[in-house]
Image (cartoon, rainbow, N blue to C red; front, side, top):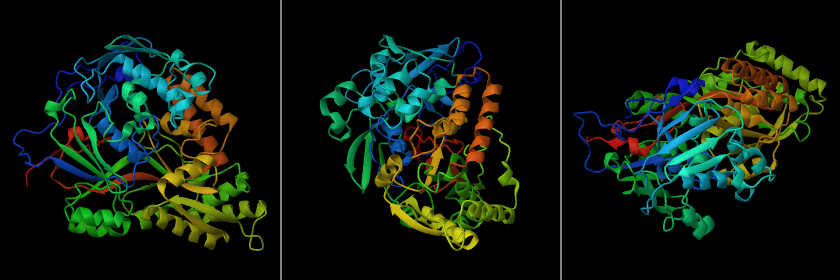
Length: 543
């Protein structure tokens, strides 16, 4: 692995900061004495069928898992979550507003073309261009890249984006305001490069295996929708000599029990999750294979505040207060999850929130307050509140929805209808606002509170948010324009307090990552809170 990590000065916004160079570039850091298996092929469960592998069109976690293997951005992460060189072997800034990236000269696309600074200019412009309709164009705005906001809004041309290629191997990015964690942000899926000639030749069909050109350690080899997506080694990858795996297969298995069974039969090397009802048994019978780690993710229910009666804060609070989060974490999931009373998880770097008032109450007190609020809003036994609860196909989501529906019925007399949709339809339904209450989850795109809090601003509909609060928008805008880490943190805490007051979402629990992991998988990043797994860092040991 890289011996030198990105300096703390860069992350904290202090003066000149230069990244590590690429002097120690073992992709898969195989310890001395470890014997490798003859067959270096990895099979992993990916939860669901990916919607796309176009980085500028994707918005889900399953998609990011694949894209991370086939496209490489300016930076990557190591097993501990540190930002390390990717296509950029070094970078510097003096003011956290202008960043100069020096690209490695041996970076190539899978067709042999060199990866150039121009490729990143094209790709960043494509991500903000309205015609692309990237669901993550808002993310490009929040990098504070110069003119990104106006380009996304259609007020300026993409050519005015603050990015330029000084030469083939020097990329300069200008921001409208100082962002001390900007380099970290460039590791996001939306900031991966795409091959211009291929995209322009094939349009939306460029991601098909027969057309695909990428610059990651692997390329798409075979894609059978709803069955498997196979990657093969990219012989042109700059660090191919240190990549160990020859093949990576992603299986879209939505049923956790089916995924578990395929793992136990030896077909899968690691799963995307594990069925909660089997956790204790698996822990007892296969302790060497059960992996549980903290995660930079929060599970919550989202209210469509644009629809009655969820435009009434009393209704939203009542529903949220009546959720017994401890039953969800300790009885339903029981894998170390933590009850959540705010959106940003406490594992987030430099974030130590105070529990909102409702979080300090007993569940009995919360239930009483919920009943009072609901009655005040005009609902009760004679006029029960009825609503639909939307969730995407997943056994755990269903169990939680059923349990919460029962809680609400018992505590408040609510009549809840569960509505299940497969992933693509569910995303579309949420984006269009065609729901009342919806299951949701959010994982940090980078390890900083703004990665969660920017989700809730008015103009951001990613994740199906339909709220809109000008005071909240102003807090986040001020935080993102602040050059003081202390001030930013204080503003982030104020934003969380405002969410607790207005309750556009009902936070339920902070995730842990629970999965089955075969001990023969080496290099697995168990300390990476963002779950950024790069197959190039993995290897299969001999049995």
